[in-house]
View 1 (tube, one colour):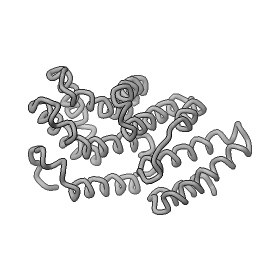
View 2 (cartoon, helix red, strand yellow):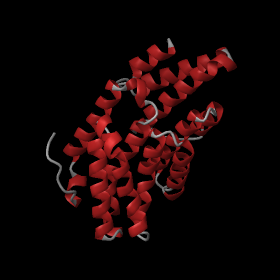
View 3 (cartoon, helix red, strand yellow):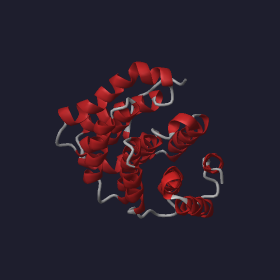
Length: 235
């Protein structure tokens, strides 16, 4: 693994580095498809915030941004390594927690919520994760992409708590750009939930799941989890 380096403003403007990060996300998803369903939205949020962080630069104090960049860099080097996540996860979480505590008036303070929610979720504290994602959705409501991702994360929390219909209603209330990667994961989650509900709702839910798969194929034919999803649904 390459030696970790400091986080600078210019780093978050480099498309090649983000492309590599995105590819690592999808590679991780493909290699860990059995366990990744519960954490994929958190990783997507990290990806979106990584590229969007530069737009906040002029509004935050430099120390807060440096602290955020350091925490984000550490997150990216641990999230794909299960052993490191176990041994260093609490350290990374504390790095994010320190940002709003030490820099409460900085705009970057609101960006820590999805990361805290991510760590809470993978540790099984779904209630705390739900609180973090709800807080984040309130603070980024004007940003449709980040809001949609926060709602996807909330839907996963509802699913984890057994409220499948509530999770589905939340997804159905969202409007996403078909050209945005968020749209593909929205259809993906809807199809999964409809399949899970099919046993109690009958054939209608299964047909709706088929329609969601068709919509996913039409809008994102190269979606990497599409074959896995079709196999899981038996379609």
